[in-house]
Length: 44
Image (cartoon, rainbow, N blue to C red; front, side, top):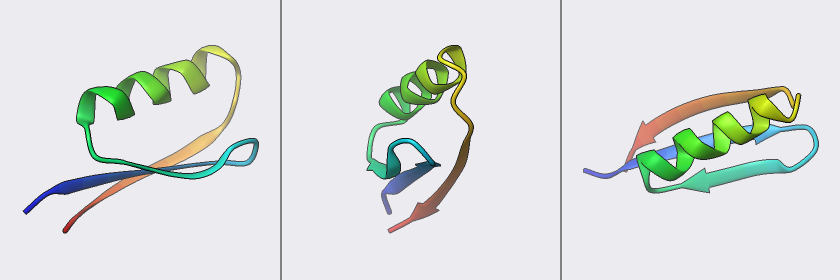
């Protein structure tokens, strides 16, 4: 099973990421720049 991270932002749209560290960094970047986002994950 692999984990897929889905991050949805109004400015960027839907982003699907496979790596946890990249997803974490992307959420940090959105938060630092004042963007709102929703984050979920699922198994594939």
